[in-house]
Image (cartoon, rainbow, N blue to C red; front, side, top):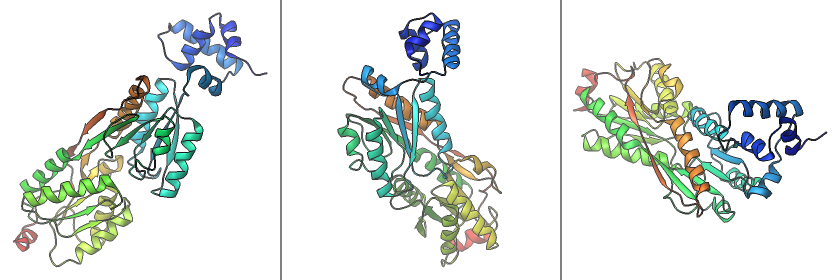
Length: 340
């Protein structure tokens, strides 16, 4: 037998509105009332009718989070921050990934419109604003990261990499490094290109003009392949800056395989501060990106837009900072001398 909200209310001795408030966590409720309602919900195996809710309230309780790929260790904390905030407010989350494919991205945009979601956090640069146009046409609120300015139905979260990058460059300069290389993220990623520009310009200002500058995908094997090109260059760097921790770990692995000691001969710096960064050998000096806060901020941005009558978006900024570990050390005297 399929029970209704009225059945739950009658059994719990409360109004249907009270049941709705308990299930959606939209109003303060005494612990005793909440416990009584939830006990009846469990007893009757009652499930919310989301379609009926859409008709009555004008919006669904479903949000979506779009990322690049599930396998990338950058994202678990982002997902945790977003999902925990949504669940705390009685909302469900549809999690999707693009796998960096424009075709897949177009398909999931159509899926989101069909699913009638209330808001979408697009935390991947695999989706351009033009591709997300169907969401705007459907009146669905969106939040991006490092992509677009805020406007109607659109909020933007800027991760300020410049602070952490400046700290990292100052750190290696103090250690006596005079020659650097950069292994940046993919050329198709706007965030990766922003980080690359900040690194190249910052190093040049400090007389460490990087050579070579290589772009690759955010994968360990790509970082390892890039290092082989660096090792084949006429002049060896004393420090390598990497566009992500995965790239950095691949670089350190390839350096070890080539008999180059890290950090005694070449220092390595990453970006992201994923969980594995502290477990690497040597542990990775990296630029910390507050990923859980990114997910939480994405939820808050959507919540605020959905509550506003005109769904006006806003700009948000998150700071980064350097975390010094054991993959950086004073520049080798031998290599520093060769760099002059």
